[in-house]
Length: 458
Image (cartoon, rainbow, N blue to C red; front, top):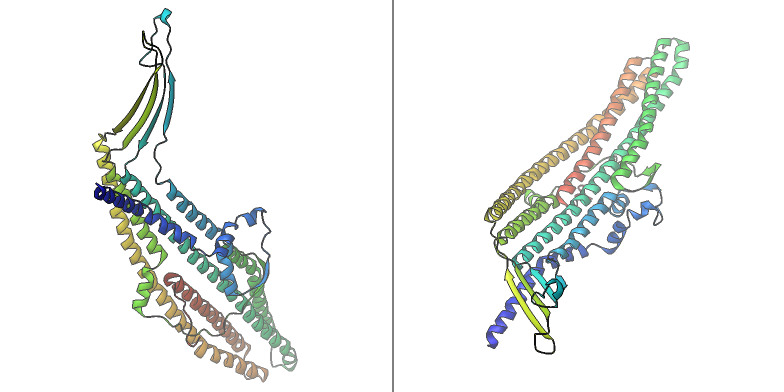
């Protein structure tokens, strides 16, 4: 007798452990978020509603500081965190069973009206429906998988927020670099215009040349003013991407004069990193949700249970004294007779599971395509940056210096000076864009793979 009891106890313990394994894993993953990050994300919305002091507006900012603050102040990331928290809390509802019922009744007797007691004078009845354990296990697995979906959503949003913040930072750096370059060339044009005064007096230049130079300088100054007017809009994009409040005239690190070639890992390591991408893991979690729904649908064919107990005061029997009481217990099962509904539910769950697994395959193909495109963008931007930085710009700068010297001695025309200026300006702007594209492509590749990519020698 002891052996069957021990076996049943062991099986019951194993069943309970199986029921709670996924829930423990989901809760543990949620609790593994660092305490400062969790506290900051929990208070992210409160800081904007006046419950706590608002964060200070920053007047200077580095990229590392921006990325760190983005993970603490981004409202979108805070929303993803709270969705994850809600999904973890929802796991506790998996073992929900129908509410118990407690009934009290008292019969009425009136002999004058020919109203007699119906089986008893008064009584109390307790009834509890019990869902079959298979449904509860399937629901817990489903809710745990949904919590995993929210966990991967949080990680994916964190990567996306870092990417958006980094791209906005690079765009603002690029604008500042273009402002600096345009200001330098506008000053060169102003110097040439000032040097043309004596040349006009000596007949080496005409008044028309002076007007052309003035038009060129005015166009550069107008472009410079337009770039400065654009800066507040880019600052606002930086604030939107990161949730970090910065001043309109915030000072950033200068854009690197030269970006080194990126040390790209091998294809095998990149593919392994793509397998760990949170967007792909999110689709795997959704497939697990669909599978749990199918298991739950299959358990709909199994009946539920009902237990109950009651006490009844039977009154005083005729010719006898005292009071008689009656106690009853009940047990029953439901009859899942709606076979067409259960079959339809099972078929729908199976179709959804198949669709979820196919979405996993499609997501993997999409991520590999994005990986190849990011590698192409990175290599193409590095090629263009190397060409401009090593070949085009040194020659364009030298050409402008030579033309300016020849123009001062009358050996070159004003059109040569203007052409050299435009060539240098176009080359400098293209180089700034190429440097920015290198950094943006590197950030995209980091977001896809989660790897820390650096330039050669760094």
